[in-house]
Length: 337
Ligand SMILES: [Zn+2]
Image (cartoon, helix red, strand yellow):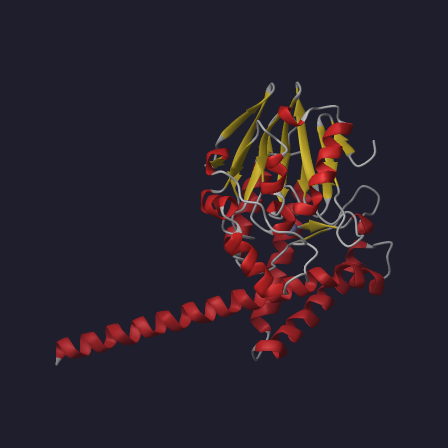
């Protein structure tokens, strides 16, 4: 089937390409008795790809009931507004804190242009399209969405982003995890064993919440996870343990880094590369060490940036706590005097 792959019974994925690169960010489709849910939309350039995927599935745009961006990043939710123009019966289900951003995306667009520069991002080649708030339903943890004869359940899974949600499909025993269950690279599969790497990219990485969310997803007993980057992984218990180990390793790397700014970023990045070298030996990848590093390097750069922001946040909280302690001590001394 061109433009769409079948992942398992009633679950499909499409891979819009960015700058000629495919398998960057997956869009997943669940089809049940002619009703459709779309999980993540890619950027607004991915919309024609999604519509041709629906045509491949022989389902009309009117049969799409739910569009569920797992979080607000442009590779997951950039296309929501323009896609919804083509899906007259669908509702968007999204974390409550993102509703106004999806309805009125101008500020989100400005922020992205501020970070990357006008016309510099493959994820924002065109303006984001606003969406009538009546078509947006704020999600709740545990919310159940009927789809044909199955039910999709929304899970709050903060840690990568505070507003990240995932979708538990009880019938398929599968979770659509966005970026909350790490990143996996098909090039590093060894037979059926996949490798997984936690994403700590900017700007809301919270290791405690991330570990709790991974444990919570794994506790549902999924037979498969569908990741936005990229695709279906199985052997969830082993992967969850690998994620825990690699989150702790990345925290240790960040905390050991000295200095600030670019010097600290470079040190974190260097240590992350060392971590990948160790994994290369541990996992026995078919790609050699340098080729593996080339594959992972863009994500390692993002992870290093996110770890730096997390460290700054910790330092900020530490400074605020110290100021509060000093203030309390001063007040106590004043009272004693
Ligand atoms: Zn992503």
